[in-house]
Image (cartoon, helix red, strand yellow):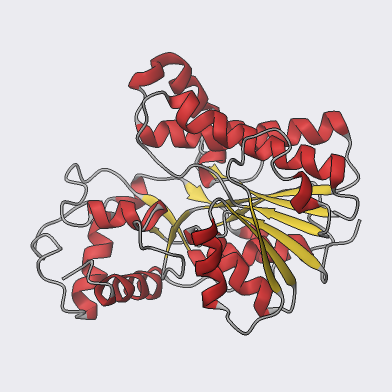
Length: 340
């Protein structure tokens, strides 16, 4: 089946860091966009960002995990980009608070589309690079599954670190989605996009907090990773969002997983070096410039994560640099008074 290149697209998680950029690119390319929001205030905010755009509409879905939550929303669209999922690392119960909502939300929207989405041709679901992370591999690509996170969660339960629970939720949600498609054989086709750690400017409503990865950065920047032994894969949030749209439009990527990641990885010291060199006027929010947090070690800390498939299929996608992305996110935080 061909990709979707026109018509109406449902976007879930449009109030979030990634989802807001997905909406931006869809509107910019001339699509009609239906956003699913949990509250009226979230819907009012995104409408305020595009006051003269008649191609944007919205629907309220208070509980994305409820049975049939998206039944009405999917009935009038040609494609769905499902970015909504818990992006948090604190919990009372790892399954109730993080894993189950991620899995039920993913399967729920696929089920709604099968029941009521008569015109739906392509669904793009946001997974994560965590879904391919595998110990003992020098190269992570789309053929791998990050089962180590599931094993850790099963072993440690409530004592599992929040980042591991989040990673397990992404693996389990993506697997559940593929299992649903295999079993139910819907008329639409599924593609999953697996972004690395997103960095870059934000355009979502931050009145109640940054949410997602910007909030993690804001919390970690003053102290860094003092162990100096961690590194992270990176993608600009705008590139990750565009990858979702291109996956929806692609004729070749039905039934495929695709990583959205640049070829750069970072340790915390890289972020500090970039922010200091950019001279954004940030002094209080960063550790001393002479401190080292993983400098010079990062390439030995993380396998190579393949961007080959995305670059092969997405000719339009040119991954932004870590320097550009970090400076733009830093500028946004300075402007909002979050960094000083």
